[in-house]
Amino acid sequence: MPKKIDGSKITILSSEQYEAVKKCLGELYSKTKANAVLFADIAGQLIGERGDTSHINTTVLAALAAADFSATAEMAKLVGEEARFKLLFHEGEKNNVYLTNVGDEYFLIIIFQSNVALGMVRVYTKKAVEALDKIIKEGGSSKTVTDIIDDDFGELLANELDSSFKE
Amino acid sequence: MYINWALQQINLKIVYYGPGVSGKTTNLLYIHSKVAPELKGELVSLQTQEDRTIFFDFLQLEVGKIKGKKPKFNLYTVPGQVYYAYSRKVILNGVDGVVFVADSQFDRLEANLETLNDLENNLKQDGHKMDEFPWVIQYNKRDLPNVAPIPYLQLKLNKYNVPYFEAVANKGIGVFETLKAVINLVVANVRKKL
Ligand SMILES: Nc1nc2c(ncn2[C@@H]2O[C@H](COP(=O)(O)OP(=O)(O)OP(=O)(O)O)[C@@H](O)[C@H]2O)c(=O)[nH]1
Ligand SMILES: [Mg+2]
Image 1: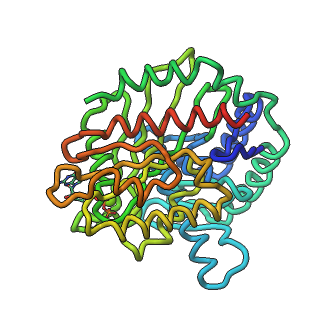
Image 2: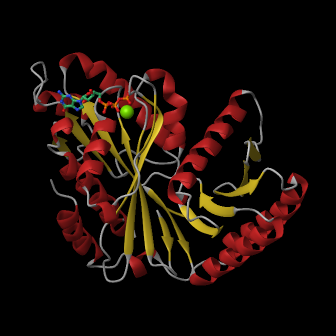
């Protein structure tokens, strides 16, 4: 799915893919009894979320987790580890956060209470990772970037920036 | 760039890069202080007690809908201090556009050059080319007495002839101008390369 156009790497998630992602996150959420599950890309952009996220700033969480994940990958390289670390686990008093990669470009964040069995989280997460990887790789969008960034988009955006971002 | 077709969302990642204390975080602080509450998220700063960025700052901005489309801009700064090289590399993951915040003072020229070189190497490793990648230069701290003249800075730092802006970031001068330019450049670049 990622397509390279010189500067930007452009990822387009089709409506079908988005629905499939949401369904998969919903299943993971209910089966693991997690508080919340988030799916994001390595640039830190949140793709989907499920669960009770009303008191969590999920945008910021995705940005922090992506940086955390990328930093760990660099750490792996520094200590001579060939493969990147596949998961990260933050253990807290009340909550645990579990991070795992989905292919090279995406990752999952699972937030659950510390009394939830980690083994169960692991099992269902592994299944979700496989499913998400498939959705991302196979369900390629028929839409191209020009369908959304069309002829007058640049000009309209420039005007909108002018009116929104001023001293 | 990440596009969610179902939600008609367009996400861009812009990174403020540059040497230590050049004013990267100051740019984000100013933007955050001026943008209407409904268009901005929380400003997250991972910094030391001396206000030096240790990993990154993050701020998400939005503008109104454009023909039903919802653009979102994820702004990041990197830590400028030399020994945070790995953090800079990490934050560049998936970047769409860069603002290079240069410190205009004469005695910061070496630091500017070093960091620019570091940016070029990091982008190269991700398969980008400096002469095609959307980036702009902001010559900051123009209010200080010991600044180098613009033509001199241009000669030393802008060999790719990218758009440049003069700024006094703590007063907000040139801050929005720079941001708008890099966003417009990212969008123009997408269409140009088709
Ligand atoms: N005089 C003057 N001071 C400025 C200007 N822009 C920023 N500063 C000051 O410079 C200092 C450093 O600014 P920061 O924005 O924290 O620098 P930074 O680039 O984020 O530094 P690192 O996080 O270490 O990489 C602060 O005290 C700012 O108030 C400017 O245009 N003129
Ligand atoms: Mg800073």
